[in-house]
Image (cartoon, rainbow, N blue to C red; front, side, top):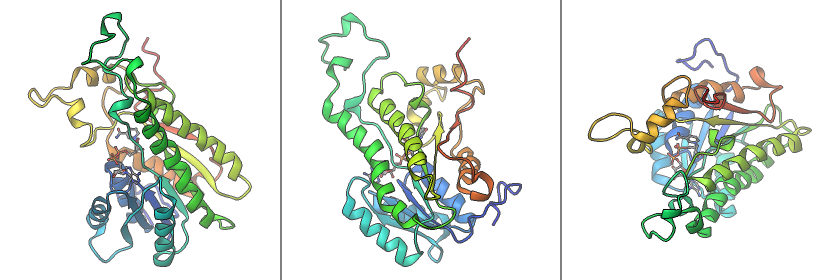
Length: 288
Ligand code: NAD
């Protein structure tokens, strides 16, 4: 079936069973909608059941092949329960999108650069104040949060044709963003695991790839990017744009084409272990 917004891009996703973790979130709900419009049966898994159910209902109302289910990507029992539900309702999983990811304030520094004067200031979190609990949270969510669902759902792919896993890494995996060392390193681990899994699964026919989005404007980061009083870009957002050759943020829908290409075995059957930047040229730009 053809995704109406990209009619030049036929896909072979009709009837495929797709599981998306973090499916109630901004980007993954967008991706789930696109896959459903290509004829896939889509299960949106999320810790926030209401968000997953709302996203499913927004995609196609009540009588369609999109469901929202509860699952915690760090809790094997809930993943197994969701896997059973998906198998009973739709059949075994053909495509897993590992969409869960996020940061934690306790793994974040206040400033980009360490200044001697910041040391001891209770208002400022320096590298020395980073909390191992916050860092542990970020590593578990982003790394184990990809590994554990893959353990559960890739088992359903074994011995079947055209199955694949698509992880959501980030551009900060290759160029760590200032202030968020834990999130950057954890996403580097996601890109690394993508390659490891691609090699490990290569003789089973399961392909493993990733998308690495750059700065996409979503409701979550809108306030960080756009000043609410002036409506102009914030200072950090302006710096991002000077580092982005295309001089604009991305839109969630701009992940759809690369996703459909990676998801379609007919289109990208020999692509394995790739981490595809979707970043307006951010990664390629040295700034001079
Ligand atoms: P989001 O915060 O909108 O969605 C994340 C979803 O994951 C939420 O619905 C949340 O409830 C769910 N979740 C959190 N912990 C969970 C858990 N333990 N188990 C199951 N579900 C859980 O995020 P988003 O902005 O749509 O980002 C999606 C992915 O894209 C993430 O991996 C993120 O790191 C990555 N990414 C986003 C951007 C961006 O600009 N938004 C850029 C690069 C990479």
